[in-house]
Image (cartoon, rainbow, N blue to C red; front, side, top):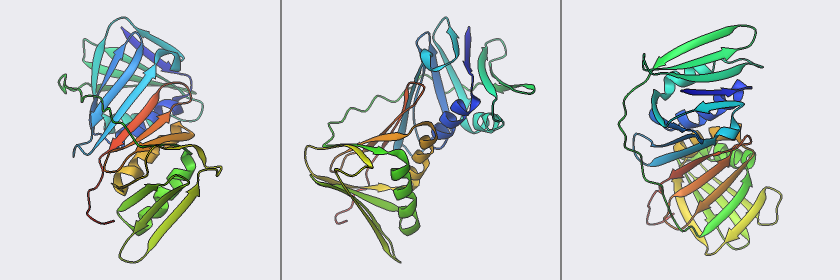
Length: 251
């Protein structure tokens, strides 16, 4: 048996939007402790790691572990239909091999989507010793990434002991944003060793969809390492992204 409910459907809507921005198909793994997901994007450049404990739901019942493989685009289309004040419930129909999604407000709408077999493979967790650990307001980072996207396809993140510099350059112009470690937008700033790396804006833009579920971002990276973006979900749990760096001789 598996039943999970959100009193506010917008919570699940935000989470699904943040996951589906990166992956087309994925396995949700449910257990009596809650729900998790870990998947790579089709190009295997980025990874999303999602965890939501049972306490994050208004009601959660699961008597055994189960794997729920879904097409994320189909899931997102349905949850987008949730209106203001709607609740959302998930249920597993093993006999029909379907996931039931119920939206309830002025009316009760029940959808069923067929499960897909994605196998049991789960990407291993990524353990990296990062040189830089920054906690920044989510809106600030989102704004910078959107600004950079006007200029270039890539963004350079440069952490010095006193200043975080984020820049982008393209054929028609450039952008530079410098934030001192004591400025309001930086909630935490730890630099064990100065680091500078280059990342693809296409992916970072998609990852910013998680801002709908979190007010802050924990950003970790190092010279030539993946960047890690950790979004703490207000109701509990997290969405974490990893993105491989772009390697260039001079940037």
